[in-house]
Amino acid sequence: MTTISNTLIATKVNNLSIVQQVLVPGDKSISHRAMILGGIAQGKTQVSGFLESADCLATMRAMQAMGVKIEKKKDKYIVHGVGKHGLQRPADGKIDCGNSGTGLRLLSGIIATQNFAAEIFGDDSLNSRPMARITKPLQLMGAEVTANENDTPPLKFSAVKNLQAITYQSPIASAQVKSCLLLAGLYAKGETNLSEPKLSRDHTENMLQGFGVELSRNNLTVKMQGLQDLTATDIIVPADISSSAFFMVLACLLPNSQITFKNLCVNPSRTGVISILKLMGANIELTNQNTNAGEQIADVVVTSSQLHGIEIPKEYIASAIDEFPILFIAASLAQGETKLTGAIELRKKESDRISVMAKGLQKLGVGCHELPDGIVINGTSSLQGAVVDSEDDHRCAMSFLIAAQFAESPITVKNCANIMTSFPNFLEICHNLGLSIQESK
Image 1: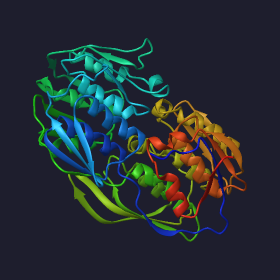
Image 2: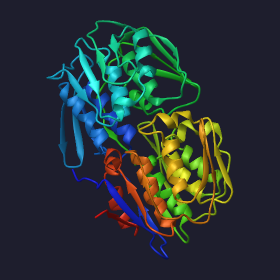
Image 3: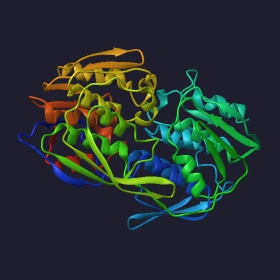
């Protein structure tokens, strides 16, 4: 796998306009789930469009460590499912998820149910992230799991024989929590009944049904009988809307530009970024809409727009949670004030994204200030160059690199290597679109 330099310098390209089609890599969330569900299904699952990012590859290696044979044939992956009860203890009893919170939390739902003990952990960033949100409900189901004193990884699971389904009201809208408990619920006796305060992304529910699992959904509640088996199926992973978001904002802000994103996942639980940009005045159209394996797919056309500040509706927060760093760049170059509240979850991602982005934007000459659960940004006509630190957060790094196209002098972004966790060919697409991003010498 190629690597990305830790420090990158991005420079404005004068008179740049872009009229192109862009195909971003496969959806990260769906790629994780394809490997996990394919691994515990009965039969061979063929996965097309799998995202070969560090995070998704870590999840694939975790399944391989537990005895699942996964092979690559040309541009497809074949997952030889071992069934729900065919997983084996890793050779050293440990599973390394790297930087992937999705991988760790979803895999925990599987490991919690097994008849072997195992320890799951990640890098320093992941090992600082909160896990009580999954360990407490798993313990209610009968799982035996311990964490560090701050409820952070490593998580240590003991072997168990039986789990009991629970009714659980999650205090946060989190697809990772919901998915963890649904995966554990596959092994539990009784009906798992989960509710959340806002609708989080529902890729797990869609894919479970694709693997033959029966479940019901009603507004913010999902119910599923336990002890169901999964039957292998073929999965086509659509393009990732989170990766596209960087170039959506670029297209909005660049004059005389239009970028078309092909085969994009437009699952309603993921399209908050489109809704927010439209409220800001963005010209965005969806064409060629269709459905594949329960996921809505479309070509999305984004055209140059005059953006204006807004108060971001709280109902869009869960469905845009990963896109806020680049939305903050859009707000910085929009006319007027943009205000976000109710987004405390942004402080618990790969970094404290509110703090990282606010510090960086202030260095770029943007008037902004943090709120406990959000940020206020006053738009400006152009940015100034500076050295900013992404603090090892891939989405913050990519957002600052895109911002450089609207800065009067170069922007140097530190700690960019983690872009590989979600978007390995980000720089390739940037260069193909005419942007200037170079390694620091």
